[in-house]
Image (cartoon, rainbow, N blue to C red; front, side, top):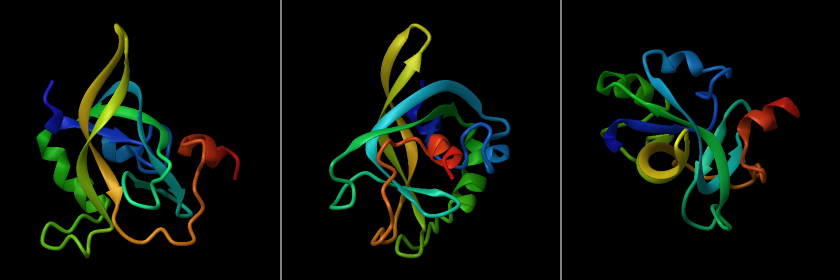
Length: 138
């Protein structure tokens, strides 16, 4: 399985949520989780994987998708990735270890994930790491 074409989603791209239609053409491989920190940005979450905001790392729940190479540009546009300027990018796409709940048993795979690139100062952490559950409590 080519890790360059795997995407871990944890927010509005999840099945049943507001931006899931952008995943049309991708194949959902199933539930998965990563070790990171999830924050409430209002209508969407932010993910941090390193630095002071990420500590302590905890489980963040999501889904693993196989993406067609042609889908990356539209997803990068949605996540406001600026290929010419990391500083101007709201999110950056990075590889991460994913614990995938495969039908034949749990597997660790490398996938891409969108990590929030701007300040998280004053933003509440979603301690349980489940954005879908967080949305239901609002």
